[in-house]
Image (tube, rainbow, N blue to C red; front, side):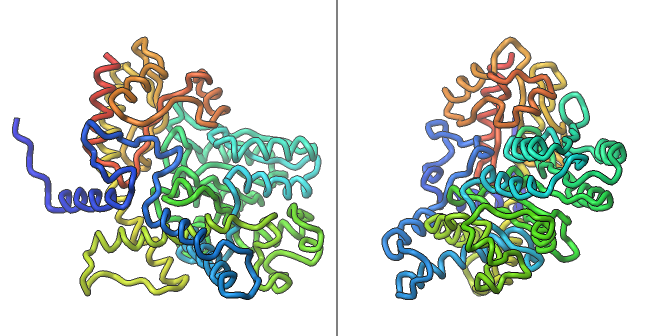
Length: 466
């Protein structure tokens, strides 16, 4: 059977993927059957050499405390400031409407936010929680409600297999049943099991109309798409938006971006961050930024950010620049990005445009097989059975008498890296009737994966799920 030749654009995408892989030590050996195909990216991406080198350089040259005034300290100051600029640009093409807080993980950051919110809640208040959330955006809100005597209202996915992650009709019903008492809506932009992209702007608009704030878990979307969590015409309108940098080609840290209006409203309501009294009592929030040298995030970062992780974030910027350069060529026509917030915003937009294009054939290949296997009764695919409106994260339960663990073992034997389990979406598994210890098999790709790797995965599954 003759295979039709790839189009010029398809060949260009394959060449860009090959170039991208060359910047990752874990990937540059190739995608042949003797090499591992890393398809567990929803658990964390690989990191490019740019990040490795940036962290190593920081340790060697400027591993000192901030603000001390001598040369190495000034270098450290500049590194952390540069990292903050990048994450602001990643949050939005118009990030001036808010600011970002850095922390150890999304779980830590959302727990800190929930602890502040708990101080403002009272009996009768309602928190609307999507059961499609990762536990990072659930457990802390349940505990905050319990502490204050507030009420949790659950908002569930629609469909037997969670085809619609956060249905607007379901949200409208929940909001209407609690009228004016809803204070907060917490939901994922993409479920880390289901893979479908939620209409965040529509959800935030509905919440805002009901007088509620919003906190969006963007961990499962951020590696794949340009964010618009800040201001401007394209803004989704989320009050807070959180993601994990170690899933976006960076170090193990996380970002919580919030609108200035949301941070200040939380302060006015009585929510205080857990930091030293002389920092918190001196005032915080955007209105009091001058008390901390125009650093409104300072009270929300007890112990400060991880400085070497900030260096790693600067390395992520270098990788994004490299990706765009690889895509456009290094000649005079290649775009340049100034060393500024505006330049970073333009860089992030350009880089993610290429990533979306690089991921498209992976989504198509994996979705085509998994949807067909679902229809044939060989597996139960969770989430939308479509290539539209989703990222290349797929979860399924085998239905042919083979366990999730055995399926993963077969994939491992073919050097396909993946895993099974509830993936910290414990409540979602309960809702969908998925047994927790075996959970689901999850396959997740990123822009640096190849069609060859995805096809190897499909071939193994075809053999196992007879």
